[in-house]
Length: 304
Image (cartoon, rainbow, N blue to C red; front, side, top):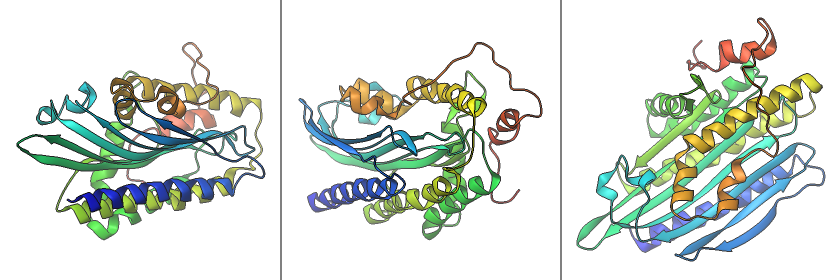
């Protein structure tokens, strides 16, 4: 890995942020992403882009960051003690889209690159990322499309990769205190540095490049679906689960806050409105119950 390699990763991530924002804006008659460039005192900075109050996207953010630090926070070293007391460099694109229509799922994607250095020792580097889908009123065909696209992203790198990273996603986006997944999953990978830099970088790019083909057709198909107060209330209730996961379990959120990151950019992932209801049960046989009974259970979506 060379300085030129690092520059190539940064260029890719900046272009990815541009292309994702442009694609999402095609769904909005008027609303556009507003950019907020920022600098970090310890080193680095980023550009946060947020689209709010759109006709399709109630609130969404697509962030790029490139930061430096003198010591990785506990969220990064808890399972990797070899990273302790190392200077680090981290860059990535992270996004969360909260649509207005309850029939359009929330989506999340992230691709990132880390470097950890220590005098007298070899540099440690790795890629991570993935994307996942959180529907409120799911359609089987949409879930299958999402997972087919995830499989397509992995296919050039080995037939076994999709199953491996799909399983990791199901396990990662799981609310232990609720006993349910956050949504219907997708891909999740971390600590990827094999077999070499070019291949690992290529895989990260493939995941990043497949997010829009996975998500945009679902948005286009469902954004005008008729809905009422019932569906809206359930959407807001389920958004509460999204908040719970991000604040309790999400490693990216914890890393950002523990490393002194920019709070507004980190918490951009939160929905603009969410509700909590005490001990709320879904009516048996209802569309809301179907989400719990069928879709919030890890399964093989491509070979039912």
